Image (tube, rainbow, N blue to C red; front, side, top):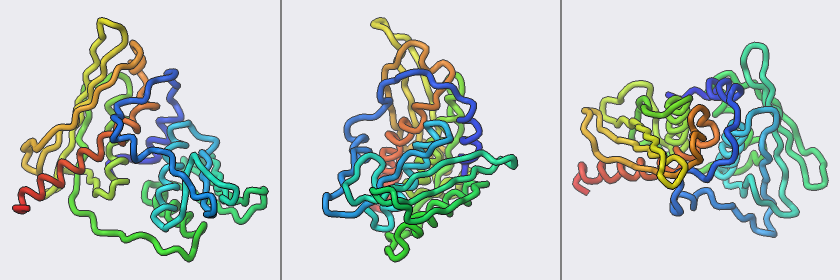
Length: 274
């Protein structure tokens, strides 16, 4: 996997917030997937509370991945909605001397009764993904997971250029994570029969105030031929992204990944004569 989760953890620990920013680069249709998940009043679901002890962007990532894992097992799960019967899954993270991340999971009933606890020491991306899957099985051991279809194509996320501060690195990592979570195989090298995605950032001051930030994701086939581009743009406060992209990298990638996957799928359909 191109983006290393522990590297993101370590990097995020050093990042300082840059204040309130508008929701970045997310058009209305892209936001539909992130709309509040409403749990039916008569259904016992699981509310996943944000992890404590880690930076906000790391907590958001862990929470979303946990919710996704639960939903894949048929569990009604959410990070922002619950009902009176919902179980509560809380997590806390603690950095260990060897660099691993210790995660404490606690599953409770609404009245505070602890249903169970578990601890995972995360030392790699693979171990993290395994831990989240195992937590979902632990919460609902008898649930039948959704089908795990073989990934249909592979993508390498090439370097992002043009962003100041830590933007190039965080955007590349965020896009790799977003693609992986969309069930796309992410590779460290250009796949022989796959695709390459490269990001380019431009920032221009606006006459009316603020900075116009544009992110373009160029999608190429294995031979370097461009098959399409996904463009995003938004206005932020002047200088807001001069150094820290931590609060916006993941939302930018998540808003673009659907378009990238659709672009590739259409290209494959045309190539197959569909």
